[in-house]
Picture (cartoon, rainbow, N blue to C red):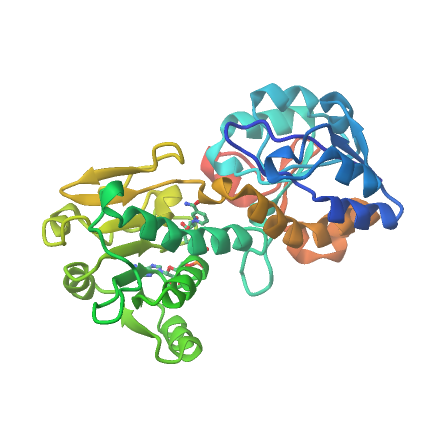
Length: 360
Ligand code: NAD
């Protein structure tokens, strides 16, 4: 199959959908790969590396004219002209939040397979997990940075020093983001407490961290008491398909220590802090009632090299199946089939149909 890798053009998007190593794997299986010139630059990957891997460097039009186009972000309006019947598009689509793109895919007859709806039998989302792993680890790094006085924080070193207590890190939600945040916070020597509503998840965390974290049932009184002692709070809850619950309410802020930092990773689902709002990497924080709020909605975007490799590690096996078998790959793999959102002008993903009152 001829596979196209266009350069990402969304603002501040520096990831690329295939690394040279991934290209080499596809070429070895007999596929041809065309890569838009400069597509890997933002992730520190050069055109020469792609050429050595067997790719041909081409213009944007040529990259999009391939049978299967693999991307990172959903097409933006200037890319709609490339959508067409017979095109297999494999990328993040997030259609439930984007009626214009849904219409563009349906009107053009494009076959759209969305990373975010590929689902394993245990209901986990393998192509979302790597970005949660990145955001979770990064949340503590960002929290530690913003706890510095010059960044508006309490002036606390996460690890403490001999004779001085380490910081208290409170993690709301012990899923992928929360577990990865805990790993880094524990590694940095902080005192870590993880809150979750799922008891078996707390049992699992208690087992794997073997006494190095405290687990707590996520109830309003438990959270209300803990925020008064926290130096860094990580928001990492998710209720699939719903807005995140407001676990930290505005009135709690006045009970907290001035300069406490909240990194609300769940901000992309509305945030789990009442006073959260989305921010950007260029201006990541704001202060409410003396509490520093960090709300960057695309945290992995600032570590594009790591994020590119983490994403491609997970997408490549599916990309290979699509390249080898075309749409027959969907019949052979139920998880991949769940990724199908649009085909031949028809919407095939129920949640998107529900969002827009459309038939699926
Ligand atoms: P996950 O499903 O793995 O984990 C969510 C956890 O929240 C689960 O363990 C669940 O039991 C728990 N939970 C649900 N309700 C709760 C409550 N009331 N109190 C405490 N815990 C509760 O999800 P994830 O992959 O860890 O993602 C977490 C959030 O981070 C999502 O909103 C995701 O979209 C977001 N995210 C943001 C970025 C970013 O750049 N800002 C990047 C990746 C992920």
